[in-house]
Image (cartoon, rainbow, N blue to C red; front, side):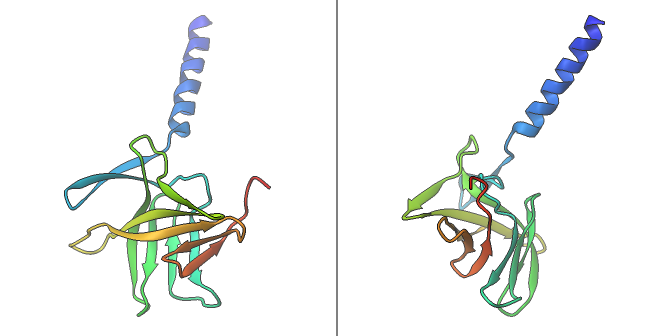
Length: 144
């Protein structure tokens, strides 16, 4: 009986540990190693649009994949992440009621799939998130 209890406790701890960790990926840009994550404590995933328009879009999925639609409406499948420390702590610049992050993405369907960096910002008082200052998504603050 003690062995069975020990087994279940070990299993519970392993499952808790695997779900509790933030996924961190190491990327290389111009011979420099950086780290990215898809978890920053805010609901980053979702659909980003120009205000009042339905296209072009940026779709960020919870698994680090997504779609980036360009001005000519061509779509590319992407992988994405937000710059973080080696321990998974997001790197950002605090502004007045906002924070600015570096969002990295790469096209999955091209031979030259270099990582591209764009600005990602959160505006707390407006409850809005922006990619490149143009594509926007509303979010609900979970602290309220």
